[in-house]
Image: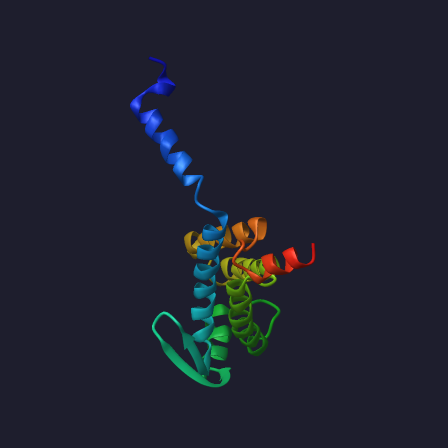
Amino acid sequence: MPANEGLIPGLIRQFISIAERIPNTLVAFVARFSIAAVFWKSGETKIQGFAIDIVNLEFTLGWPRLSDSVVDLFRDEYRLPIVPPEIAATMAATAEHLFPILILLGFATRLSALALLGMTMTIQLFVYPDAYPTHGTWAAVLLYLMVHGPGKLSLDHWIARRYQ
């Protein structure tokens, strides 16, 4: 019996065949929701007066402002080169709210993923260089979205179909 016709190779081929049927739209949606949640929750730690957590059903709808300790965090712990901590804190809080919303909606997904990939690389290189397993996972998801796009359940897909 040839090696490629045994029980194990047959099961492997069957599994691969089933896995290949998982729609890209489902994979992209899970990727979008998951990576958006990571950055959104991080952004929520940087502000006060406004909070939306759809998983835990916690909502505080007020005017957002930087939390009292976030500038100190950027000054004392993160210590980014070149960018002053006040500007870095504002940029990070803004990016961690804006780009996850865009990714979740599937609007400007590839550009939003690129922006968050740049943020991930900055964190990896300058803030937490030992956190490469976490940042590698984020980078993989963001690269997937950049390469494959947001899938059919997205504004990007709707816009592309409308203007083709």
